[in-house]
Length: 280
Image (cartoon, rainbow, N blue to C red):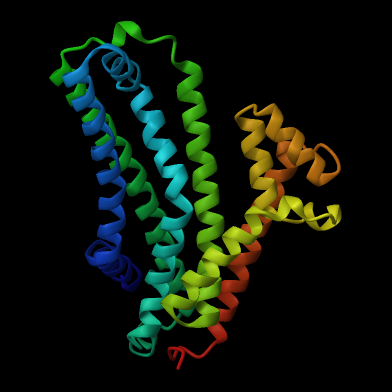
């Protein structure tokens, strides 16, 4: 019963946090601006702009575009969300009041992580749904029939789902890194700065000349998975050069999964042992 009440409290807190609402709104303002600009140009100038609208507004292209937007900003969103979700408790000095009520620090943090996962799924569903609706309204307003213009979309849809899976993996990995950094720093700002720094550093790790070191980097293995799943031959060549060999996607998946579990274990351990007071 306590666990369920804690979960409901976390859901309510997540929904009411202004920063979370802002992140959701920003994603959909981008979609609204993009589609509105395209629709206005197609309505006013027609010609090539109308043809472009027929292609871009086509289903499932609208899904592909929404997933591209999530992929572009997903890591930043996960870092800000996780740092704020964990660090705000330190900033308001509420951990010392909350934790004694439930007894287990581990279960408390796991509840927050579960809530974060649901928030990520909600972001995906809401953003994709909103962009698809905007796309459909655009076709109605322009009175164009894009369905007949579509090529067989199985490959595009399959690729979009793979990109969504990769984005989820990236958000989970960098989000957990940010949680770990926030627990260490005991502040929102420290978590965000550390999360951003780690994401930028790990993203450029392919340039490190030590191949043994590179092969241990989960971020490079995530890229290897992405190149394999999207069949990006040029990207695979660059990754293989950084590794010094071709690495099977199954191996990369094991490495990434192991790294996520290791980070999670270390985070839970530190959270259960560290002082809950905010950084002075």
